[in-house]
Length: 160
Image (tube, rainbow, N blue to C red):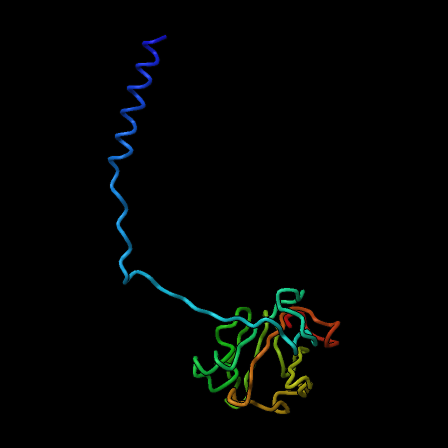
């Protein structure tokens, strides 16, 4: 019994020196440290028609703030929506004054059944040339409500 305990003690003593022999990790260089700051919108008034926090909204909502529009130097709505997931926006046809927006593959405006709103009022969407174009400089923020939202806005396409 004594031989087993002496052998066990010698084995454990040998493994502890191996553990201490490992090299200490190098400290991070100050050039490797990156500090990221961000802000987020806490509520969306237009898309939910109330001051509901975005996290509690059952819809997928993307908000492009005035600060974000300025940082990207976006002169048009198409440029402002360029980095929004699920949204394709570009100038349409030979006239670059009108932006065509597709949300999740469904057109938003023109001959589609998606709705566009400015300050809570629905824009006309009977045809391509009856829709007004907007400069992004006149907007406080852009809110994109993705998915079906018939309970809030009536008839709309599945894209949003």
